[in-house]
Length: 513
Image (cartoon, rainbow, N blue to C red; front, side):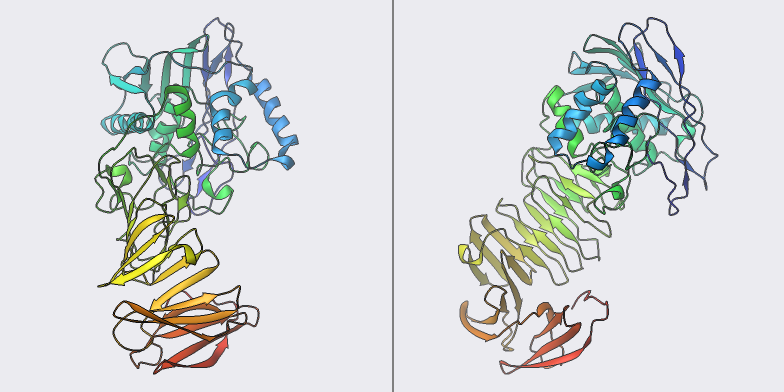
């Protein structure tokens, strides 16, 4: 289904596509040939898919026609563009079929029956979880049956995964999903096997691939869009790090473009309208539980309630972005967790690293946890009123009212605020940096009253962190100057600063203070 080049870190191998066989009968079926990724350490080398494509009444594309479309894509690869969710979704729903000379398709009813009698217990669990993943984001319901069904699941053959559909006009009348038992060594949720079930069900309910390819594809040749990756769609053939530097992880939900696409066909679902926690201490199920599935990639779709992302179990520095339509870098991964465009998550619990948290204007309650944490606001400093009382910082502004605990720094457009105790009175003070004015200042906080003074000029230096570097109980300031290749500190004694150049950066960056 996916990659074209082996990746040493997982020792996956690809085989050339042997090409499907043809049956020119009048049946109206199309099989997607998904190519095997063999996990060499655990299973034998997979065989190419030999599923048949039936032509005739539905004017189905031949492999030559599909390869012609792919070649056309290759000729235009230099002009491959970044696509919006709407554009990616439209290709999944319509564009893929147009490239095949076919008609977009969907189920006429929003209730679809399925039969999983042909699967093992582990495979049944994956199929039902994957069906539920699509049900959670779209107004489509799945009902199990032991008899004739709209969608039939099998595990025939070896090293193959494909879906066939019968259609009448624009309506799907039946579908068969066949994923061989040796497709992947296990039936865990966080596995390529589960991702394949998500992908094949996507086909069975009307979605094509994210590009004009089938069976095999190479990034940089066959993709129309530079962001045709698993980060955006489980229907893609290309893993996340093909574009944008995201960490490659198996996908455990429909992704951003998939949700947009499937909702355009069946409508939006109303899912998790109560108070839901995602991450550690999750009440949303195993898919969203970092304790059960630590290295994973998913998109949160949530319809209401007061919700929380809990990252408390991680020690790495994280970027947690509450803005809908954006990705967060959770744990040691990059851009692995997304919040859907229309979903609102109100609260965050950070980990023990130095987290950067982006608020979303939903009256957020943010607990940074341990580490030196920063909350990022989208407006200028003068638009906000900040109060600190009993260790709780309240920030009121155009983004709403945010309540912060265990947050050391605030960041505004063009200005950062770093909070520490600079006069040793056991009360956090505030360090200000105004890059536009080339000034550095501080607020000395006493009984919730701020006394401001300009300390000096930044002169190309930027704050890397704060801490008590000379052991006198008063916070000091660590500075770096990338252009000058220098690192230095301000030691603060009785509210007087002394600057010292400590040494050269020489390619090093500050990991924390």
